[in-house]
Amino acid sequence: MRYLIRALKYLVYFIVLFFVLVFIIWLISPKGEGGFSLTAMFQPGALPKIALFFVVIAAAYPYFGFTKRKVYIGGSFDEKRDAILGAFSQWGYEIESEEPGKICFRIKSKTGRVTRMWEDRITMDTSSEPIVLDGYRRDVDRMARNINYALSENL
Image (cartoon, rainbow, N blue to C red; front, side, top):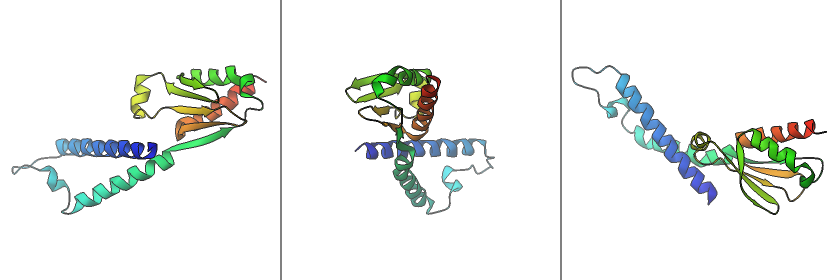
């Protein structure tokens, strides 16, 4: 279900972005005496092809855009908790929820949340070694490196 919701969000995002870009191009293009319509910018029959392209990209994006990463911390989570939580805090994350074996983080910044379309959550499974980070690929990779760096400083 989460995959479908993400795909639909990105479909809407791509469509809105497309229309904004087309409108900007239409605004800055020279208009002759007869005017220049938006439909004249595309060949006949292009709309179904464009729609299919957006559906395919939006359907594939969550698969490539979100991931799980294992982070070996060299001990139990309880021993390394302060360093790991400090790494998240340093990059602007706060704890959204915490339960045994699982901590969810969200970005504090409203701007950061909007730019990620409210898909900014990183879930950390702390029940075993290695811990597992789950979320937006770029953020998960960044936090995995941050955790490794924070733990190497505390040696």
